[in-house]
Image 1: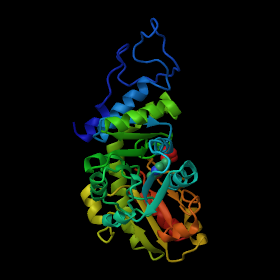
Image 2 (image 1 turned 90 degrees about the vertical axis):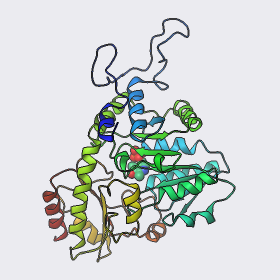
Image 3 (image 1 turned 180 degrees about the vertical axis):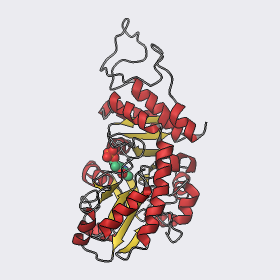
Length: 380
Ligand SMILES: *Cc1c(COP(=O)(O)O)cnc(C)c1O
């Protein structure tokens, strides 16, 4: 099955009791058993839920994996992956990481003896010097947030696989429509399904997909043992969102290219970060590992102040000032004070995340209206 068919059909069966074409929302906490130990495979809803199972079957197909394990948020998925490690283990992470991922790695897991190191992965060979006997997991995010840097998944996972190190790619920014890390050698792929996969800004959700039976069993154990499971209504909303994933992401990519090109020629704009430009340092790799360049664009201003950014952030009408990304509606954000406020300023500046950097999540509206909206704000 090709992608556009999988989003609609993979893992989805008509409901056996009624024939309902849409997977019902099994809003139940427990299941009646016929006699002791005799049941239909469902005992208690933290452990098993049919709506969640349908979603997991669909997600594993989208990422070409064998197993998908769903969680109540993207960070709950990351939390479970980190819990498969042991005190004393080391994790090597991309340096330009989603703020919440950085916070979880440093403020939570360091207390339990897991050490995370944040390194430049844009030249794959650069990571060798940081690998130690204790390195057990490599955590890749690409394209990165908000700088839209590109990590060569195949090159990094080849190094990891040769040394028996597990790898995980946070594929939130690309979505499974544009990029499939398991095909490129990664052990696991994770998503904040809150973003493109759900796509309608109405639910928080996360997942991990893998073809490794042992890791899947550990994650399944943690899903039940720690209990950060998504509710059935949330699983239903994600399933519904997925049906148009390919259409939404395709349109967002087209809109993003037009907007990036328009920003580039605006006199107030000093830099546009967009992997679709040939001048982008990761362009060739992005072209190789992604189907298109995504719906995210960041840009910086000649006037490097928070005040200059604020004028633009408060003068768009269609672009709503909000955290998050990947929804049908366009959003504008200020990473320094919003998504990345938990990262110390010195660390932020090291990767180019200035006070004037603005991040756009391009939606699926008519692109002419989006361009006009940005121009009004830029000219204010
Ligand atoms: C939003 C996001 C997360 C966290 O996901 P939640 O669903 O908000 O917990 C992780 N990684 C990336 C890249 C994100 O954008």
